[in-house]
Structures are given as C-alpha cells and as structure tokens.
Amino acid sequence: MTDFKELAPTPSLHVDAAIVRRNIQRMADYASAHNMQLRPHTKTHKSRQIGRWQMDGGACGLTVAKVGEAEVMADVCNDLLMAYPTVDEYRCQRVARLAQRVTMRVALDSELAAENLDRAATAIGAQIGVLIDVDLGYGRTGLQTDDQAVRLGQFVDCCGGLRLDGILTYTGHISGPAEKQAVGFDRVHSRLEQLLAQWQRAGLCQDIVSGGSTPSALQCHLAACFTEIRPGTYVYNDMNTVRGGYCTLDDCAARVHATVISSTVAGQVVLDAGSKTLTSDLCGPAPDSGYGMIVEYPQARVFRLTEEHAQVDVSRCTFPPVLGQRVTIVPNHVCVCVNMQSNFWCHDGADATELLPVDARGLLV
Ligand SMILES: Cc1ncc(COP(=O)(O)O)c(C=O)c1O
Image 1 (cartoon, rainbow, N blue to C red):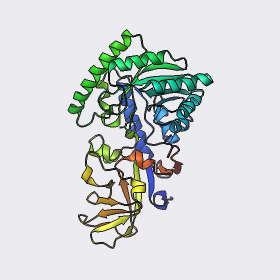
Image 2 (cartoon, protein in one colour; image 1 turned 135 degrees about the vertical axis):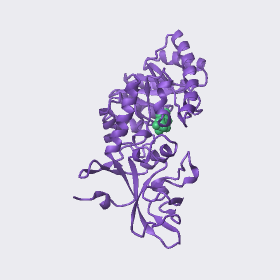
Image 3 (cartoon, helix red, strand yellow; image 1 turned 90 degrees about the vertical axis):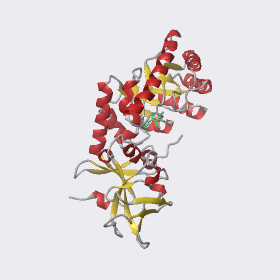
Image 4 (cartoon, rainbow, N blue to C red; image 1 turned 180 degrees about the vertical axis):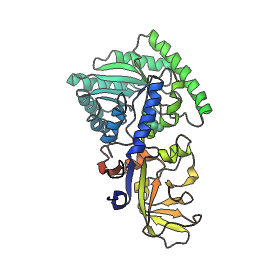
C-alpha cells in the first residue's frame, strides 16, 4: 500500500474524509431534529467536493461570502445564499448572471446594495432573492433597528428584479458554555420576535430567517424563529473550536503536515510551515497557546512564525521531534489556512487518497 501521507511534500494540507462526513452528519441530524434547514457556509473548505458532500448530507443549499465562491459552488448546488452585501455594480452584475443559472439570494443592509442589485437583475431579466441583514449583537453588518429593517424590506419588495425572502442575522457574538449561550439566544429570540411582528404587520415575506455560526450552532434551536442555520467551520473544525469547547481534537478533519528542517538551537525545532501556511491567526479562546497544535507533541508550542518557518519550543517534550521528522498540526483558524493552499490531500480510508483543488481559493471578489 502506498503511504500518500508520507509521499505528499510538506507543508501540505490533509483532510480526513471520515471525520468530514461525521461532522456533516452530526450537524445535519441536529438541524433536522429541530426542524431547521442547514445551509453550510463554504468559506471554510472552498471545495466543490466537500460542498457536494454537504448537499448529499441533506443541506438545503450552500452559503458563500463572495461571488467568485458562488460561481464555483453553483457547479454543485442550485440554491445559494451570499451572506455578504453586494454593493458595487461589478459584483451585482455577476450575481445577476448567476441568478439565471441557480436560485441566488443575497443578504444586504442598504438601499444602495438593493438598487444596484435590482438594476443588474432587471437589465438581464433575472430575479435575485434578498434577505435583510439585521444586527442582533455582533456589531458588524446589519441594520440596527426594526424600523430600518422593515423600511428596507419594503424598499426591496418594490424592486422588480428582487424578491424579498426574509431576514438574516449573524450570531457570531454568541459563544462559550451552553448556559451563557442560552442567555445570548434569549436576547436574539426576543429581538427577532419583535422584528417579525412588525415585519408581519407590514405584510413582508418571512419565509427564511437565517442565523447561526459554529460555536453556537448546536444551540440555535433556542432562537425558535430561525428556519435555517449557516455554520461553516464545523465541517473541518480547528483549535478555535477545540479550545472553545465546541468539539474535540478527534473532530478536526484538516491538518497541516510539516517537516522539521532545523534543530540547531537548544530546546527548539524549526518546521517548514510558516505564516504562509498556518496564517498568523492566534487562537481566540487561548491566545497564548501558539500558532496551532502539534498533535504528536501536545507539550510543544509553535511560538513564532515567519513566512516559511515555524519556531517550536520543544523544551517540555521528553522526546522532541528530530531533524527530518514529519509532524501534524491542527491550525488555529482553518478557514484562512485553507485559503492559503492550492490543494489538499483527501484521505478516504487506507487506500483512497486524492489530491483535490481548493477550488475557490483566493476568490475574494
Ligand atoms: C455571515 C456569516 N454566516 C455564517 C458564518 C459561519 O460561521 P462559522 O465559521 O463560525 O461557522 C460566517 C463566518 O464568518 C459569517 O460571516
């Protein structure tokens, strides 16, 4: 049997298909048990293959951030949500063209975005679904008051090229232990109930109420108004989700393989995976833990990254890795790490290994 894990040059990204399938199944089971649709965010894997598995696993559609990602995922899914405002005309035109091929929805929070999207859709006879983005605590995009949201909903309702489908919010501010999350969802739920009452009085469509992110994904039923959830990171997981307490190392499907390329300094080894591979992201819940975790050496600490080098403190390891040895790293933030790779080795059982492209890598428009 060929050991592809050993043959693959380093640094390289390796994905365990069995773990991916288990993560997909777990989230799909949760969503269906709570009568919610699952629309995974594909910014984590950027791969047609993984998107296809998510659709086969019962997802109602896929979420993307960028129109380039949407164009890629349209090959494996005919129901896409861009959970990202399209303000500029260039992007709006590409979304409109895509809407001629698949069901396309966009979340937006301004009249400018709606106007430009409407103009692009009308020009080619397309129709684009819209979710009004409301901010219920994260403080990034999204309208701040119910009145603003209803006004924009009414505006969209009058646009011939657009179809108002409901509301979207991002609950990235809800994290931590279940009891703490329950308090956060309580607030989200009552804000949504208030908004939906006003929404209904205005006769606006509320077919879709979209929420969710990985840390709080399994508590989303507490916001009973959600009709669908959009977790992304759950498909691979990373040290952010492990140290946040949302999964275990066994649930981490994507790992970077690296090789010890120098060991001249006492108590230190240097790996060939620097910030161009692992990214400079620290671990949110544990910022002092270093730049990812070396699975075989939990006592080691990746304490400094330069572009192509990782310096690892191995002074607490009884038998530290030696020159030429390969190690496996779970990155802190897998979504950005994946976006740094052109391809990944997908291991599906002992004999089935494929080198797959990160199809939407670098598609930031
Ligand atoms: C709008 C939106 N929805 C969903 C997600 C998915 O969140 P997570 O990666 O925590 O699963 C993100 C993540 O950035 C997001 O920005």
